[in-house]
Image (cartoon, rainbow, N blue to C red; front, side, top):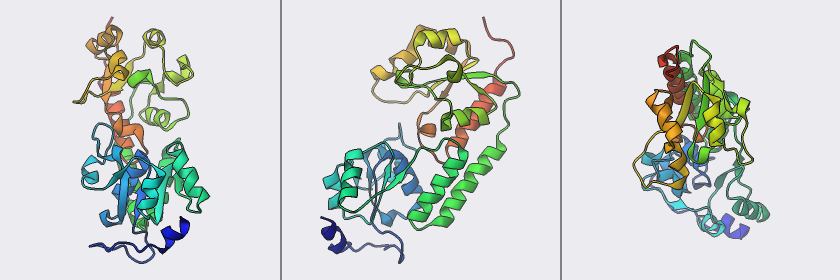
Length: 277
């Protein structure tokens, strides 16, 4: 199988990659998709995941239009004859394991826990696809947006409630985003269950100044979103204490996470000093 990967000719392309750059890149998770589609030439990309084209979760849905997609199955990847595969540390593990066994180890991306990690991952992927200068430009874009953020003047307490009540763990990138906005992550104080979710009772008793929820998107309702419409949260909405932010903006590391910092800081500045009873 390895021999067939090495021996099979690469199909001709209208814009072939420059010598030394990969010409058939396949990404195996959404976060890899986002970086690959932003940093590589379109002609270098052989396939991304089916998630890349869904605007509800992807920040590169427009760029993904027309790009072949896979569901991360090993047979799909091998058939594409890639010269670079980029995977996440926790997804498509069976496929990643098989690729390693046949002598074609993917580039595996970790999960950054802070902005330095985001910059490092951007540069790592940019170098791998042969465009390090684009990585530097993307990191500079991130830093420029962060530099424009005016942090909250008061140390407000923020609780993030995603679908299924998943929250932002202390020590994660999401936690770093909250702190960069000048806020306090309530999840670090009230705890979470084994799955990383916050019990509704704990969320209600936390009395957070701001509760971040997923911004409403058009699409089919799901049970995962049901909790976000509980009367307790509806009351918080009526009090102006909820902040809607699309999950796609901080699902993956990239320049878009700086926008989350800006939105949180703006929401905190707009919050009145006294809570509505």
